[in-house]
Amino acid sequence: NAGVTQTPKFQVLKTGQSMTLQCAQDMNHNSMYWYRQDPGMGLRLIYYSASEGTTDKGEVPNGYNVSRLNKREFSLRLESAAPSQTSVYFCASRLERGTGTTEAFFGQGTRLTVV
Amino acid sequence: GDSVTQMEGPVTLSEEAFLTINCTYTATGYPSLFWYVQYPGEGLQLLLKATKADDKGSNKGFEATYRKETTSFHLEKGSVQVSDSAVYFCAPFFYNQGGKLIFGQGTELSVKP
Image (cartoon, rainbow over the protein chains, first blue to last red):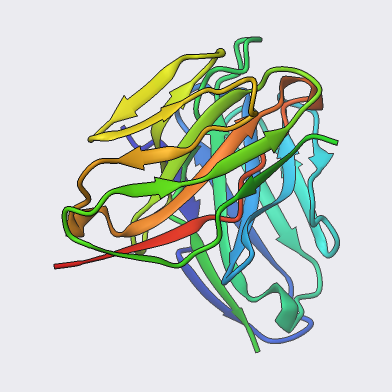
């Protein structure tokens, strides 16, 4: 029962470098999400995917791109990392049955530092 | 538009004190309401939920009641423990926003022995 798995757990990047954060879930969920968590800012939605083949912008999408590779996997890409993207990133998934009553399951997070 | 406002922290309490963390929302419809908890170094996990008006969610001694008339979902616990120290997030799910899931800003709770 892996749930939601994020890789890597820690990463240090230099300004301008690119990287992809990986997320996979094994619960057959249709909706997946990417958030960033910063001190005093709570959890802010970057992008989400309500179903396989669709992606939508959240509250803070600038500087990021996403790919819903298949139903299991939802990756987040930083094309040119900036120090402002230093944060803890969380992936989440949930099963939407058309009622909006189901909870989200979260990965353990990726701590990213951009120097 | 639909939004959520959560009581700011940090909140510091002594063990066995009463806890209330306020959460209110604005919505054109009737969202499902969730509280999540984040323990240090971990991701969020569901604490409790209520999916319709007047429902009460409960778990681990925590309770919250869906109040449609005041658009609120305040989290309460009668006697907190040191192990309750964590960050708590309120999260209404607005079904008319195409599956978007947003969170309140989080309230950090620290319980001292």
